[in-house]
Length: 438
Ligand code: ASP
Image (tube, rainbow, N blue to C red; front, side, top):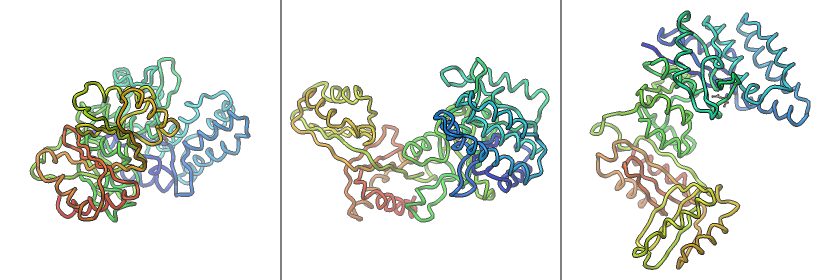
């Protein structure tokens, strides 16, 4: 049994958290390869080392005294080292880094958060340190070279049975450090899980997995025990973020489960993310509910549109021209609306409307603002009737007005649009309905 264990920033924020990590690693011999994020927030008032590193770079770029910022970062590592009585000589390396600061690339500088956190963690666990720069191989376009990474890992495994590796960065063929997008240590974990053929990828964070709904809206929502990659993608897209979305891609075809666990409550069950779960008859009808505010819809009405060809295409071409991504296109016989993120059209919505008018000469065109979209996601909805009935019954009984309805053709997600002001209530009502009878 082989597990890749990845610890997020809050799990390695200080010496206390390091101790929890050690207990977790030592309680299961399958946990041999450890990925760490950079030390994160110790509490709400604290800062993430990565944020400080970005800030430090901005100071350098704008010729503002950057040393106080660097000292703050340095101190985070020195505090952990001292509190755990570690021996790793990071001081000369930090000194050398300080000397090179003005000439360092942004990527190299921000990668140092993960680098030093991993150095300290390796020392504390008594595991060898392996640098991500020598292992995680990236193409110049930022995509991953799995073959090369696998080859490099084979070499490492010739003389190492365990290691700690920094997340978030790798290197391009010219040897330069390249960071991934924010939160990218999750991706490092899944690359390792793929290339080392792990049985499970454990992702340790500060929540006990995914919840059926946002706890800021619903009191004590139920934990999601198991979820498919596809359901997760739908929920993440709508704002339920625990895991970096791109961490699914490296392992999807290998069907390696991702287990989300809580470093502060290791006894909790967490959430298991799998490619496929066959529980159509017995599993939950709704897996999770997530949503986002701040959409808008351009509602277009054109008499006898049903007899004309190309109307929708022409309207969509306008959105494409303005580089706006379209979320949904609910339609009737003579009308359709185009739902987009309000932020994406903030500066040019009236230009877009004018361009649509010129392109298709509609009988009426109207902008509906302050729209919220809520996705009700469940892998078993396509096999069991009654889900939409329950949703709309609950909304009707609570006098909630539905502005839009959309269902993906896989019948895994029902999206409803309501006014922004009804957002919280709609989520609560739907959650209540399905937490009683799911
Ligand atoms: N430290 C990086 C960030 O804050 C990457 C990570 O934590 O996964 O985005």
